[in-house]
Image 1 (cartoon, rainbow, N blue to C red):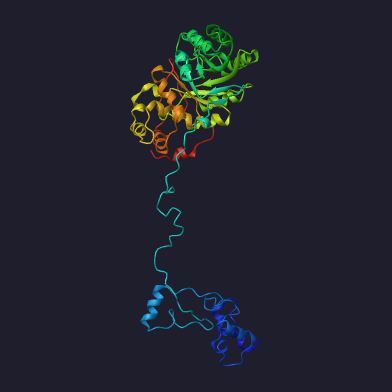
Image 2: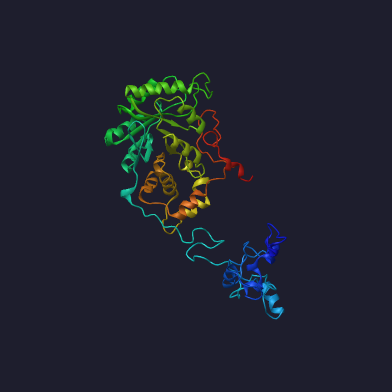
Length: 426
């Protein structure tokens, strides 16, 4: 081994630079001994190390710009290399600039740090009546109109354009007048639905026959279970002897007989929907529930859609309660200069834009509700109305309750567990 490589510190560039010919100033600069080809190459390159690093520096790479502190230290020494004498083979390049300031702004067209993601106001959607969905497909082949009315206001509702008439159960006193209004308008142009009351689960066939006889409609486009429980007639006591599965089997028989085209649910929670979906041969097409900004039922709507159920909203105006109709955010949305509307019109439109058909139950608000088919919510109105929804741990506000004792399921039971609920502060 050559003398100059004796005691070579294996693995240490800081120890090996003195033994590397191309790293020594006398060789790299041509002074001293004869310059070998590698050394001459090193001189041409300004000095480099065979090992790649010399005193922690890699001279084959551009030198780092000196820091402000290094420049000030060099200035105090009266000039020269900013970090002191350079290691053999290392030549500091002259600094051309100092980095001492904020990070570069980058692309000025993109949001800056600390600013909202949307720098510009999102584009408003323009209302186009030709592109508005007027009905939705339901299992069984029918089309359920987005705007419907209760059987008690059938004549006025049909005249206003609400082509879905939702009748009550077999004891509903408005069945006859609803049937007359439907016949006058044209049976084939109207979607007719009715309900099975909680005390009729054991007499499904009789209930359907009574509704058809009273209305004279010939068949029902949709027949729904009004509540996921049954009780004894004339009482408020829940009947634990019957089963939901047996009731559904009787409803499926009505479909096979042709008296009913599609089956539905009403006031069913996520667990109740999932329970029925496990046994149903004829799948339910609809779940009609109370739905408004104070009870948005987001999880229920999502789970029903995954199962192919269309969610329909009843009590969408909270039975006229001021808690909703005079809510400060709704009042503010009504006063939007770009789209001033009444609370009834905005609440109805809010459901329609969610893809949720509605049932209009009050004749006094029918015209205002039907105006919802002539406009779209502005972005500001949508944000305000969405913000009415209470925090998950507070729960929604219900304005519709049955005449018998009934406990609603937790709105977050069933379906996919929502871990975010646990993160909401108390």
